[in-house]
Length: 89
View 1 (cartoon, one colour):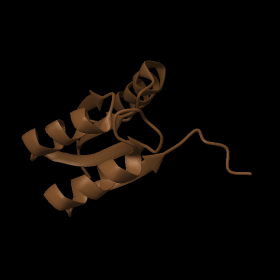
View 2 (tube, helix red, strand yellow):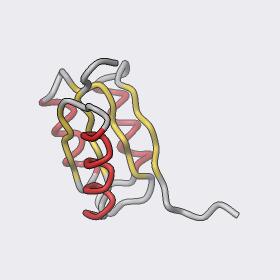
View 3 (cartoon, one colour):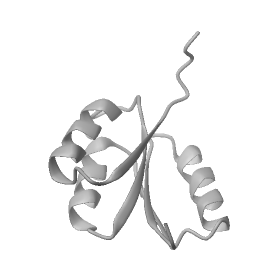
């Protein structure tokens, strides 16, 4: 994936900022951000050049699983990686 456009979806601004800085440091062309599932879906629909979504599992408004389901309905080929800070012990 050369110079992809990536969307970070997380309700925590510090997480989005940290991931964005990291992605830019490794050469990602453009990093978009959304704070909830509804914002993410707007960006997925508006940006056909989007290659990857980093999607938080637990968010207000719409959780990551519901957002993933809706992304699949709009752009089934889009790569999505789920993120979580949820402890799974």
